[in-house]
Image (cartoon, rainbow, N blue to C red; front, side, top):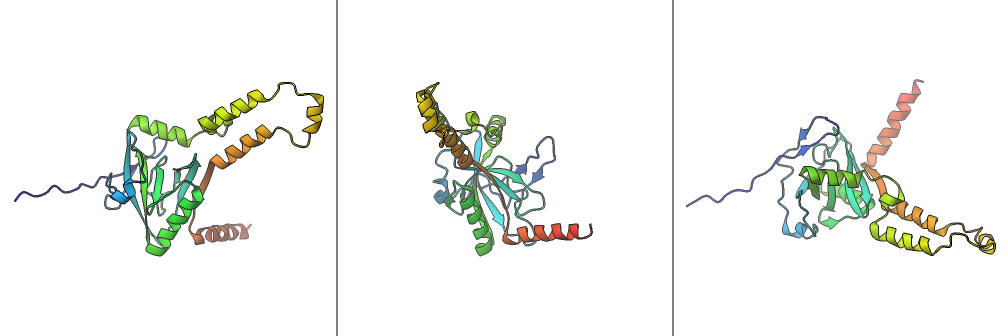
Length: 226
């Protein structure tokens, strides 16, 4: 009787920016492209040049969490992975976090809450990740992550078009009475732009409950001898 082929496990490498060294993630911790069917539904669309993997994040007492994330148009990207941390070697910068423990995430707070909850309650969190594997896909992912904080880049295309139409409706030379009447409420369109920008792109460094207290204590100890 012929043996059935076994699923193979891959090795994930974390690429350090600007010529830095790479680290191999434990292949037993990070199976490549083997998503359970109940998690596959959260992917919605598989893009060329990317792989979709299930990353297991185990609790490691004594280590900081070490994961920085950024919300870009309700998509959560990995912005920073610290060495000697819980997530060290598991994620790559520009990975997109699609779901945590089966729940799709679209904001930093939900992502952070679910990750910490999984570690506290089960000692493990599982994360569906979209990861660029071709050079073109890597450039695309990094371009998304590194968007500049200005209206022309940060505002989504549909919002940008609406704002453009609104600006076209505003007279170039408002009357004196209009200026006086609007003195208390200047440039509502500009205010709307700021709101969109602030809501759209936020970065968060995820920490366990005791990390912030430990950091403050270390600062006090360092400053005590001055």
